[in-house]
Image (tube, rainbow over all chains, first blue to last red; front, top):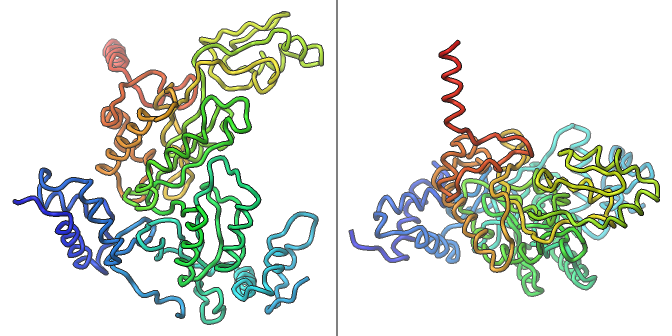
Length: 83
Length: 401
């Protein structure tokens, strides 16, 4: 498999977060392990995964959330408080 | 007393007595802050019902950050609309908690503009804690804080804001510069502080000497406690002065030495090889005794308060390490720990619990350390290191029996 760019890793992570949205909370470590498994250790490093997560966060496509631990999820509208 | 929107007979009880009362403070703020008015109403209801009405979680930070904000929502939002959101913001404190009065006024003014005006100085993590704001005020607060040289602290599954004692700034016992180390670690690990990537939190606390004024041995996953490896410095004339002043040195100093490593008969004799560096004698005679000059720190691992599982105290990982810039040996060790924990840790599992689950024999090779009899839970005890010959001897003993 060809070595992916950081943006491609970010897109693959985003797809995974979208796929699991509402079903399972994913941690940064879950995404990193999944990307290394998908692309192979030689093609995808932990540092590149860190950079990919940063792209997702800085662009607002994903956000961090907390439910007893920190997770990466899709942005949500706050439902519990009036706007 | 300020007028409040709600009757609060139970809270009013907390204003009686000579001690400071947080209710008094809330009532002072309430006339200018509707969210504090409603906070008082909700708290009174909680006291009446004997149950809390906060939900926490969800939102965790500002754009790009995964820590520093603890989302807090009222489950009585329809009734107490002004405190429907009451988020906490953690602000990274300066090492040693030193401020100019101007800096404190700046923080307070920012919080008056964007939040409830209520603060906690400081939270148990060490951060400045700003209590109570709405989601829409998070980004403006952050913008003003950063414009004034402040940044958010840690929360969630990240490296929590490192904290330390006042160290060499105010204390003669400091065996290394705790403030310089804390500042350096904070700057070096910004990514780990702001972008949670761990299975669970990781706390670093630095104490300058074994007195451990920041209680790092009980509160930090990684405790860095100052120590020395040469001899205690003794001023025999100073010791005599304590005796002249009425101190019973044999009974109150030598007799309370846990290692029984000192004797006094007109001259204080210390068997430094048996000393466990408890600081008792130095604390008892601070003008006569001082730590040695070959100073550094003992690195301990694994303490935590009881949250998911019970409390743990840290145990010794590296008996002595020089703590000098650029602190590369320490940073490398920390990164190896994180690497191992990322590979093996479960969600909400602290590193001390992970070490208990997987064993020191798995942890030590991963961080590049050899087993060492000095890896102790407390002096004279050793919870982790087992030597094969012990088991052989036991088996032989059992076979003979």
